[in-house]
Every structure is written in C-alpha cells, then in structure tokens.
Image (cartoon, rainbow, N blue to C red; front, side, top):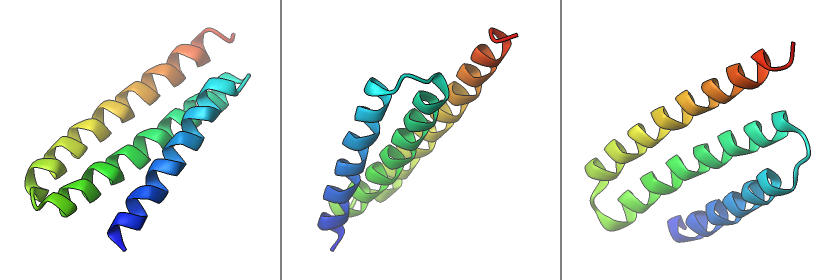
Length: 84
C-alpha cells in the first residue's frame, strides 16, 4: 500500500510541476511550488519508511520543509512589494 502511495505522490508532484510551468499567474505558481514542496516532504518520509532509514529521512525532510517555507515567504514578500 505504501508503494502505491509513493506512485500517487509522484503523479501529484508531476501535476504541480506542470502547473508551475504552464501557469500565467505568479500567485498560482507560488501556490503550486508550495504544494510541490509539501508532496516532496511526504515523499521523502515515505521513502524513509520503505528503506528503514526513517530517522535520517525525517531529518532531511524537515530541512527541506524549512527551506520551502522560507522560500515561499520570500517570494510572496518580493512579489507583494513589487506590485504597489
């Protein structure tokens, strides 16, 4: 069941990547990139469970989540300040 979940996560990540590439609006791109980051964190944890190296993969996913959060906030502030 976990392997099927990994395939679904990868499909969702490809859908979000497609949205990032094809969207015309900056807000949609930021939201899709944030969703891509969230799916990536869950995928890293799922791979950790599959490979029995859960502690290492959880640490990596936490760092990846923090980097994604900081970048989403930074991009949002940058585009909000350039609007007005």
